[in-house]
Image (cartoon, rainbow, N blue to C red):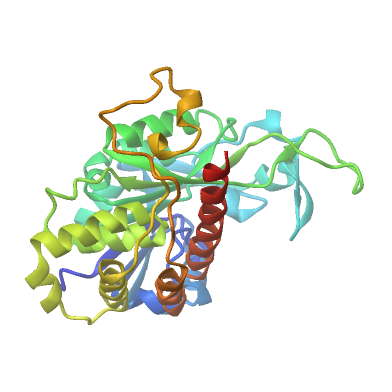
Length: 370
């Protein structure tokens, strides 16, 4: 197998949906493996528009759990809420106002429709059985069992570089672990939290259309990257990690990788085949960064408000404070970061970079006016 193929495993593949947003034009170097306990949705997942563009797609009818054994699986009224765990009836009264489905009572979503016995297995057992590579990207949407899956296949997750998991702030299912426990587990496995996506809030009753505001935060998603050890990693792992950093919009990590590639792996990087689009993206963006004009916000001691915050007054061992930081706007406007990201389908990332640029320039003006 090609060492540069990225293996992405999604657990809970009903409907062919997966939460790590890889633009279709960047999927040619990605093998997608999905697992779902409900055999009836396998064909739907395989034929879904969501899986277009991947180099390889496989949907396995496995119930991934924390044990290798027999368990009861519960299909709920809303099949996407199906779980190995029983729903918490105390939350049945809660209402989520959805822009797509209207007012959704949790009872109408979580109530059991049918139950059946199913053979479950740990993720590590499934990978061993199918004789497939360990995944670099993993996402989980298993309605309350995410913690258990990670804990009892921790060797698989320790090898990964990018993990997405559904999270809960309240016990939607009996005996599930909530966000604090799940977060601490992933931290212990060497990950760092890079993003949170909070779902629509829940209300304890129906709210009028013209009298609705905030609500209870019940669930969402968390995104984790492996804690960077850029100086220790192999060339191949750096390339794959850079791909994950780009998908999760972590420019600071990309910068460190670009500099490491230029310093330690310049020959290997130059000779690296552009057989996958994600590699083309990395090479193009790296070349742009290394050759670009760069301007930065001033350090704290360089700002005009430093004296008012510092009890030390004038500090001689620090470099002289600049009266202003002149930016070469013409040179900066030639930088092509946003254009390159847009070219490869990372439109939101490109927009965020543009917005941060405008914000940083405004902040720079404020810093020197104070």
